Image (cartoon, rainbow over all chains, first blue to last red; front, side, top):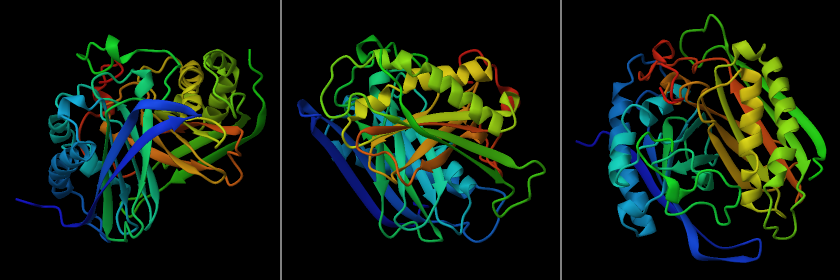
Length: 195
Length: 193
């Protein structure tokens, strides 16, 4: 059963073909899938946030699959992921936490096949048009330094006061010209989520 | 060896008393420090940029000290994060130079925090704002401490500058009730739980 009352769905794909005058071949690519949903708890304090947790599970699946599809690659080709939410002024920050943390991760991990690492996240309150930076990290090993990144998303007319913007981001590559060392992706063990 | 030339350092602190729910007995304090520095690699592609990571360590340490002080001392700090905004004459990779020295500075000041420091980075112009993720300093999965702080400076970064940012918090979100791993359950072995 669908719980989320979705007003809009958006996807954005960023493909970097040159950086600092250098050709990036193949291009690095990251994508975000974004949902604008009604906040069932706007304008009142509600103690039990279960309803938002169910919505989080639903959006983890929907947005996870949409973001992967936007890149047009197989799930196992996804290398990084991240998530974020912006709560309109009629809500509270905790509403973002209830969507993002308890249940969104499991279906997102299914959408990218595996994902032993913590899904990096950001959250804030804001008004229509506000941008949010969705952090990106390697899906199986959080310490892979070449994959620390972020993608900025915004929706011009959201979140309205009684809405929440929820974003899931994925990438099939790290930064365009990674050269600051640290753990490399070919060294990933992928068991503990860190290395 | 690269000279680290700082144009300005800005510190911001907010006290959160409530967010529409019950008023907190002790307000949550969230703080950030941003340093605007010259980007020595702006304007051209430079292959070997790694030496700058060591050169940034003293600045990372000074910024972490200053921020911890603004929050009431290192002992009060429970959450952290870091970020970088690179001016338009630079590249995204220059922002990645902040990972090691930013993390080093905070760990030194906080006495060996175990969790990976969450981060974001981007390229932008003056006034660009960035959401800096926050997690618990010893266990990344502590759900009550997941947060983010938006930081930006009206006049930075100019094209050949970078804004380097650290953030810290003194506790859980003010109405934390999304369940998950709690602070008193931290094992503190792997930095995750």
